[in-house]
Image 1 (cartoon, rainbow, N blue to C red):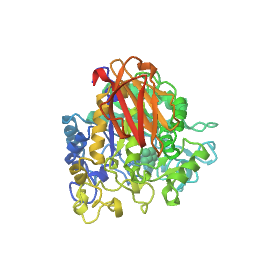
Image 2: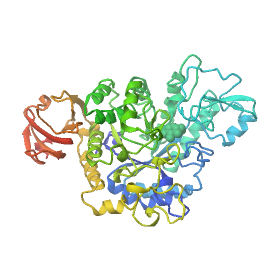
Image 3: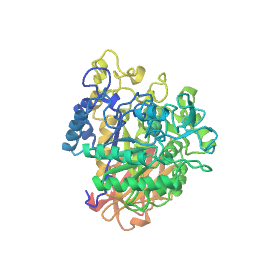
Image 4: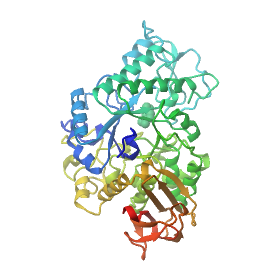
Length: 548
Ligand code: NOJ
């Protein structure tokens, strides 16, 4: 679509957990060969980039975010050659592949940590050690349900070590130049292997300084700039997506000057506000966060999502908002985890297709590149009997046959879902057969989104709305414009909308759902008087009549 190097502005991402996707060798664990077998499915969704959760050897106490060897593939997933084959297969289909780069910490099983705890020559200072666990007292604990401190005692070394996540994930010491250069070597290894970029895990926490909250420190930005320059030297234009779960004003500096730090960053705080807006039946929470979102360098991009492999995080909301969200979406304590909600998209919507569609309509028209999470495209449920975040990481449901078409093994790494969300009721094969399925709808949505230049790379404005239940977005680019209206309310809404920025132009109603009588797809109206008639949770997208 474009030659300016920012192809990812028009892209749609698909996040998948290799262990959960498809088990080709029948051992009960999904693997890289399994992903290869399903590349046509992924391509046919219309997405452009696959984000694979961590692939490296790991004791899997945090599903691979606890790396024990940065230069290999977990044996359950296959081999480096399997990854090469996957990359070839993806590239042949026009798909890019990124994987997680977990830089902040390793597994405590990693030989580096084993050497460091024994003060072995050369590795003694690779982690953050201290005699005094009251250091960096201003730092919050992230995994509040399982950790009470960022320090844990190591009896072997006789000192405390620092960890921002689980105690079995010691943080690397980025003040040590060897750690920094080794991590750049890891980056080189994966780029040379052929991955198209990385999702950079937990990057705000790389450095610690007394008297701060040990997040977003200048030293962290300096290292990320070094990393960006290093990556550009190997693979110019690589896809680098930073996981920075912060307020927009604290996230903004990670874009740097637009070219020297992260080209892409998640917009975390927008996500809970989409859910809150839906629960309240009001567009106000969306307006609030978008008004609080600063302009970003034109070369950069936000990345937006509804759900992912973690809990629906409520870190970037107020206490009152969190209480509201828990009451609406996690009424049972078992649904809560840390500062968030451990449920999948469809159950969060009470399996109501209208709400699922509305959220996706918002996702695809917000400023930024959208990510979909595997299984959500068929409305998969979750398993609250599994601990931690495992309930949203269950096997992909391909068919209603044995092992859900995921695996031929008697026992899979996690049980298949049971009840209304079981593979017998929710699976890809059934969704393929049903032209009215969510899967078919989503494919259409993605195709439309990708065909509209204004979405993704246009200028975004949230317009004033005559009705507080309606979120009205305008995206414009040189050759395109899209006006989208989203009804957050559970009742119909009828207004006449004026879009002065497009005055004098006729707009065609190109896409919509839950349209009320009298307004139908394909109808044309002047931008000064767009007839909006949406049923509960309905949505409508218009674009200029002249470019159909
Ligand atoms: C963020 C990842 O998304 C999460 O799954 C992981 O547990 C933590 N980082 C620690 O790596």
